[in-house]
Amino acid sequence: MTISHPDTDQIELANVLTALGDETRLAMIGYLALDGGQELACGQFYGLGSKTILSYHLAKLREAGVVQVRPEGTKRMISLRRADLDGKFPGFLDAVLKNAVTLAAEARKNAALEPEEALASD
Amino acid sequence: MTISHPDTDQIELANVLTALGDETRLAMIGYLALDGGQELACGQFYGLGSKTILSYHLAKLREAGVVQVRPEGTKRMISLRRADLDGKFPGFLDAVLKNAVTLAAEARKNAALEPEEALASD
DNA sequence: TCCTTTGTTCAAAAACTGTTGGACAATTGG
DNA sequence: CCAATTGTCCAACAGTTTTTGAACAAAGGA
Image: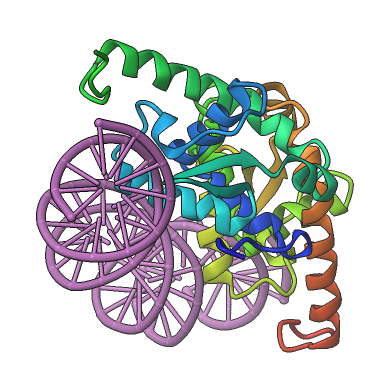
């Protein structure tokens, strides 16, 4: 395997809770839910910080078993491990996402207003 | 107010998740759910550590808005803020408790086997 | 090949966390 | 009053987390 993920049976609730106990990471999973479960690349988490910081937080989510990361070219396509989480902790992810989605929506709105993060749009 | 608690509208999901992202604190809320929502004193979290450590973790749970603490004599009667949490994060607490309860049950069983924690039973 | 895009890795610094042991405080009972 | 019970507070310690900037690597296009 190119990128290491915990097996489903190695996902522990305390680790998942720790991974999600951070506004940046909560917003990240909100982004992943916003677009209907579509995969996202790191660069699409607008308004959540530098690429270094996103890489760091992405690793935390991946190591806790919250997200799946698939390399595609130079990108990393990220998606929620929804089936695994729903199987182990029924109802948990949906309850958390209700909140996380609003965090992501705010971050996206703010990023649109402050184009410091945005790259050349030409 | 004798003991400080956050208002309901000040309870934030990221803080709740951080508070619960720890095996000791997860087991603590498991204990609170085990006995059908009865209040517990610190001394009744058998097998979870010294009184100092329980006091530390209790403060974390209280400051995050997870538990309510009511002084009674020299004891602190602790209960889940179930209505507040259910109101703000529907389905969340129940999803977490399913797991936390088993942690508490294991801790209680182990504490019964290793009577180092137990005080004089005479 | 050279450059761009996309992200990872590293070292360093600052802040926070969890644990321990001892002292302390408040309440209750003898 | 004196002692026991129940927890809190404090200082110290080791370890972890988060952040920053710079260097690096991998893939793809001109």
